[in-house]
Length: 393
Ligand code: PMP
Image (cartoon, rainbow, N blue to C red; front, side, top):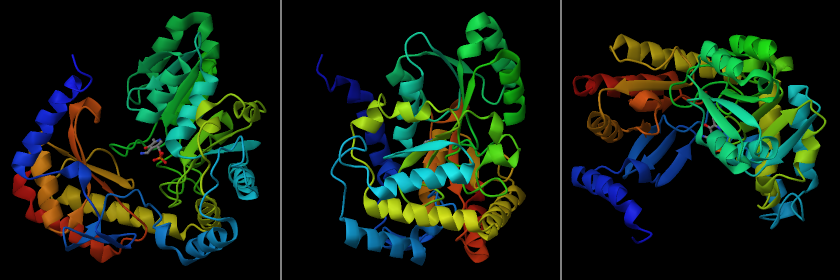
């Protein structure tokens, strides 16, 4: 047995894709023009699969902040938060994101993925129990694995199943960590947070909500689903990323638990990796100010999401959830989805192709993500491409 033998089935799949002339997982954007346009395969393309929910990647104030930091503080920190990689900007961003959520403290990590690894590995070790929604993101699963806790999956968005599993744990239930997401990344559906919190009230435990796809999207001030439902006080840990609505890179966790600060001293994904570059921190801080300052971007985003959702529904497509910035079209099978995705690209529309085993219930998805920066005409153009391909679905 060689170490590469396990790659044989992957190679076979890739060879099959090559034979079809489709390679959905290594698309190169030859030139990025704006948050919603790029050149792909030499063709002007509408970008409708980017997670750039507020369209802030080209915001002049964010770019100016990044440029100033780049010139004043250099290209990188060359070290971890624990050693030489904490600059005043990193700490200020922590204070600002904690204040934004009205929580006591925050930790900033190098990516959203690492925020989940770092928090979970530090919170849930051998002997602890984590209850996680089956559709949770890979970073939440991987964080559990790194920590070594016992992991119990409950059925997606099913508080009764969560309650059943907590009941079985008896006294241990009071010390469990429950993991859910605000908006789920694949289908764009939301967690039934109120009902999950009722289960937590009954059995005890701690609740962590990953608001990666709901920060800047939901809630009066854009904090996410917990804010929208008025439940933020009941959430022990909010984690999120700077790489979607804030248009940068990095991740965070906010909490009222005073022990959060101690996690810095035991979290390997915090300690053993370089901190985000000063320019990234500066643009993120500016983006957070813009997000907090006004609702207009969220309103535009939701108007666009509703326009796309209504357009695709009227064409007869099956969609994964009610309108949200993630609009997922469910297709019949892998090959159909591959072909459909490729045809959309030829029609000048880039979206994400999501295939099993990465998808819930083995479905094949064309996942669109909407931006506040899309114009109504661009959304119409996306719908027109879907209309032309209707007979393929
Ligand atoms: N959590 C969720 C729910 C996500 O969807 C993602 C990214 N897709 C992450 C965490 C990781 O974020 P990042 O890409 O910033 O590492």
